[in-house]
Image (cartoon, rainbow, N blue to C red; front, side):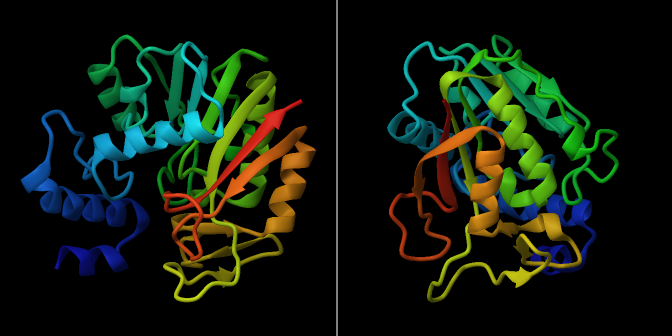
Length: 255
């Protein structure tokens, strides 16, 4: 019943109902202190284990080392932050509730709320996505990352985020992000439909629900931001996959 209602509800209510369904399913295995998805739904799965897995990707593919300064773009409820408490860390998110949870759980880290507009997550946001200034000084970050962020952003906004990430990176710094990069595949988990010249979406009524960006356009945006691709890893949303993530993982660097 909850899942059926969620499918037809407006985005904010749909995410809350989907989060409630995830919370109910998680009850048998919940860890003490795990955030409730009904408050801010960041997706399915074990909060602790998924965060640990994603930090492992940073170490394996983005060269994260002890002591590196990190910038968590779209930190959500702190899935990765809880595993980065020994790093100089700044995380920001458009969800005030999520940032409040992070501050209570990890007071030793820096979390910042930015009231950014997003069609699926924050329709009342006061800051346009292509006007955001990341809360980090120029050339101050060793490793920046945006996990499951560009999959909910239109192309122009994503391009701006790439430029802001480049601004904050030190020379040689790395930026890891996940995206849907359409490719020929059998039985894809997402049925993407053409949306505009650069992107395709699962739900044209609510584009930010899940967005895929054309490979040529994404490569152009990376280059235009002054970044260079180090590696791309195919996620299991569309086989064949070559790493254990659900979305495609890109690692780019600032020369």
